[in-house]
Image (cartoon, rainbow, N blue to C red):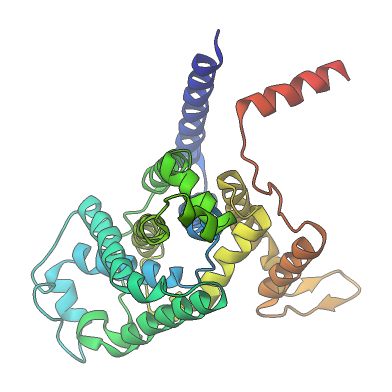
Length: 347
């Protein structure tokens, strides 16, 4: 059997195994376990799309929370029934046409992705006029602008009150379906001529430009693709937690995503997936440090926010001792796994 056919078979088997695991959890898993799996899938979508700009293109982008916010609010406003909107917007009435629009979930999440993409396109012209720390500051500023607008624009976002009682449409099939599609789509993009050009820009933009590569065109493509999937993930997140407000989409969200891709390995899609899984699972496992621990002879009080302190320490440890993260810029492949298994058998 040649390598290409073998990889197709192994990829198909992996998807079938994933479907089987999801079916078992959907059928027999607890609500808590299902919630963690949904969080994993959403963070995989966010991390893989965020890594496209920061890892593959090498641009320090600190505004993904803006795209997540836009996707979440757009989808929420589209899926809510008109009667529920009328009851919810008590300070100022909702603006038209959202007062009468009621769309199915699929259309709503696509609209969330498109709305985030349109916003990314509009800000891309000032954003990509600068590089390095200046680009980070500009994108951070746009992220804060979106959050402040959500807090102040009461006739569209309901201001600080947010949007409540959303339909819990997000389930394992939606979240993991989007996650798998995101991984496949972005992997295809990275392995294409566009992806190779993005890596060339990351390594040396001046040299890439001298070779005929248009930096703005390729960075814009990565920025728009990342924004679209971030918006879709925001829509899924909104219909998972069923309540959104401006306080949910602060810079902490961006910091979490940055921690994920740095720990997993900047420039590695596989690393982004691993980092997202560890973050979603570890975030729940570390809840114990925020609650009181009774050891029998002594009671250790819980410290609110201690999870973020531990994540920050882990990030510093990775930067100091493993600067390239878990995967570096390497990607998982069946050839690598089979080679490891053969070496283990020989040993």
